Image 1 (cartoon, rainbow, N blue to C red):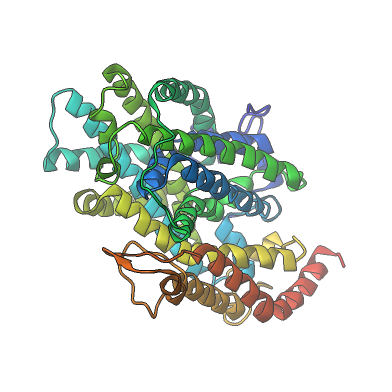
Image 2: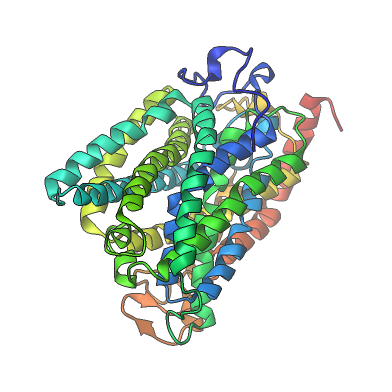
Length: 500
């Protein structure tokens, strides 16, 4: 996947590699639309050949699945990348970010509700990356004879936060260029890891004698959310640099090729690695990379090289989250330049990472985090896409930039209550079908309770239909509550666009 056009060749410096990007949630003029669908695919591809997905595959095995059960979850879960493709088709037409476009569905003020949830989500993913960066650094230092301590972890967190802010500080074109450049070296390093894995993996070994269908649905929710679903709220942040007349099929196709395929491979590799490296307790502990430290199948020299590559890559991956969280802060109404929002986010991430590193295991952090993401993002993406379809796939970009009553998307006081109420109903529906890692009263999640047979520790052993309940209820509620108001706005859109 190589690009034929480099970022901003011949275009202004508003989004030029290794220059500070000047755009935030504002409209991207067509003269600055430098990207092609394969450029977006290569950027996402650089993010998808990612150690995080290897860890997710191992954590899936830690649920208690055997390799073949985990593989089914990996393949089906990654089909959710089609949602990211669909949720990237608004950017070329609107020329703005996801939560700039989202003002049409929710209203300029109402849009701030899911935008706030998105900001929390991006911060959560940033913290995940920082935890793994610190974990990889600790493995390297341990091999050098430096043992872990509270002071060492504090220093590593501060250094990691400072470094990770660099790429998103520069902005979109810089990240696209760097992430594309990472594809080949990381493809090589993961191929070498696969060779070692092929020599030692035992895919036929079952993790436990029997896994019921309820646990399988919980694994599916985990896989769906950490693959495509969890990125749906970021798609247009990058696709807005595509030409307005871009082929929609190419956008979806290239994005799926650049994301789902490498992620399936990476998660499968993680599941295979689990079969011969470490144990459930190690992978479910505070630092999953300790599994590479306490084994002999993979040579120590390769572990050192691998951890160095992992750290570099995680900084690249975290740049996507930090960039999106920065423009989301702008969408929330903070009067900050995009790069100033990056600095603010970095400080907040550092504070929360201190707590996460010292107070939880990584797998529990991820499972709890996935539950919280599902609750809002499943109904939100359904409402967002239904609204787009009802508008016949069109917006008025200039009106999306207005945040006062002069905008045709203003609705009632800046709130489209049909969307806000539908989001609330979808969130309740998602909670009602959520299999959480923390104890939740049975009256909160009756579907999970009704499909479960017993309580195990702090986890409910019922089925998890949260993704499907959240999306289904959110979409149906919005169709019922919002169709009439959207049709009125479509009539105004057509007047402004000069179409029928």
